[in-house]
Image (cartoon, rainbow, N blue to C red; front, side):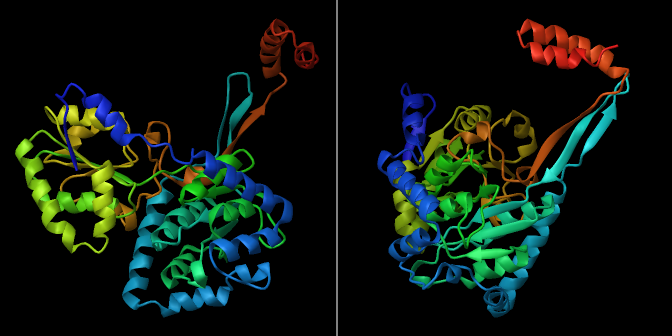
Length: 429
């Protein structure tokens, strides 16, 4: 891992270079994805069959075979070990309970002139959730994407998950059963995003697509935004740990590993005002890394994008963290609540030495679909609010329109929009 200090003259430049990431802006990928989207839009199921055979090495006779029968999903739930089923169900209960607090209700009021004003909250009709496959399977992503949609009141949830070589993960299907997913298709990549966006004879079009994927999925989501809603465009996983130097260094090393093991582009950063502690964590990393199953991926991630940063104090550490707006922020300090008010930009904040990021990934309750690549400056974690929309309510009384109509008339004529003005004036006494 690189070693940086905030007192270095070139610190800002080195930090910016280390954390730079432009997900999905590769010109060749953009062109490839645009071609896939156009092809699926034009040829529908026929294109899906070709891409699934070529990219996922899954041959099926007809597009209807891309849908997993309900019996297969239920069988997966029955087949997984009891301990795994219990863990999924407990996690689902906690995730659902947390998201119940996010539910928004319609509201209205009447002003002094008797005009009714308000907001009506309605759920989306149909959403698509993308669940990654390939290098790993993520049943936790099924829960995190589907359960907030259920709490919001979405009528139908469509799930797509790639099945390379026809291999399906029972734990993922079991999670779909527990989370109440309505239909599941063995589709991945940009072609899955295209199918959910435009619809085919077999795959229904949705109103919004959520869930993380590879660079092709991220690029496809960016390109279809506007035709459908999306949650966010996700980059590589990130963790930033702020430590006061008193947490067991093995704990912090493993917390850094927990994101680095996702892929070679993941980012793990430690900020601490104690130089000696950084040395201790480095020793832990070197000792523990050979014991990890994904040691090669972790080593590549830490070597390319990881860093240990010596700060003047904890306040400066928080300032650096705000600049980076990390996906996951651990406040591994004695009194995290004193630092919390200064934290402005982070996807999720894990407070205290005992709160590992992994608890949030699986079962604490808050959503693990989080903004990356500094987008926590303006994006929020996935939540119930992503599956609800708001309609404004306006109902004028005969008395109330007299004041509002005159205001509208003046402003409309100032903009030289005569029809606007006259439509308001017609209602004046």
